[in-house]
Picture (tube, rainbow, N blue to C red):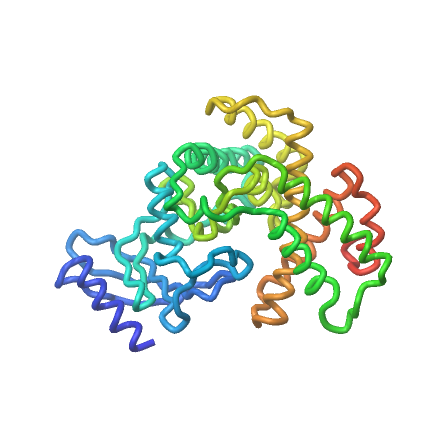
Length: 356
């Protein structure tokens, strides 16, 4: 920690002037990755007052999530910086990068405060919930429509895609860590066949949909509320996927059901489709769009259950366990709404008490 403080002080002086001083360095709650974050207080003439330090100094160059192993050799540029440059040029609100020193595993970012979208809406009245999620949808459309139109293959996001291989990898992750880890043992063969068939069908459907630029984790904890706007963070895993994937991430994640009720969800889906037309995109059939949206939400929630159990049991990060129960309840709800998948409910109910 002392070494980190010394290094941060050097970099702050380099960016904000020789007179700049670090007045404090406080650790922030981390995410599911291996990066570490700190808030540095800064005393500098005309300086920002504080900045966020992202550190990976003892971890090597973080490329992307382990399942996105699509490059023959590691990219020459840090994905965060590569995608940040593209998104900023496309008009997406992203934090400013004050400075970066990749070989030393350090970056100084704009301090957006501590209020994420979920913090802003979780106890808000319904009208405020809808207002803020509309802001998030507006920003998503800048990313998805504006970003896709500005396609540049130098951006890593356009060189990787959510394809059938990746969907099936995540479903396998759910089976391994969500169903078979610990003393649970192997699934009965008949149950495994039913799940495999359903997961194959979902993967085939999703991989056959048109792809646009996606953040990949566009959820309420990766959207910061700053100056009455939504600012997008944690975008280094951006890729090509159906538009419904990020939409499902936003409206179906962790415990968003507390405020995104089915009625609110329907209004927000309608708003997204209306704004999509205002962007000049072809009118989407609501029923077909909704089916793909539900399948994307299910696929992502199955991944989340497996991932959060993996983080708990393998990575020693138990903080995500509390989100597993609401995710399972949402899986049950969406299985009942997606065509032809109701038969999976009793299969999963035998393994999860959260599913009736």
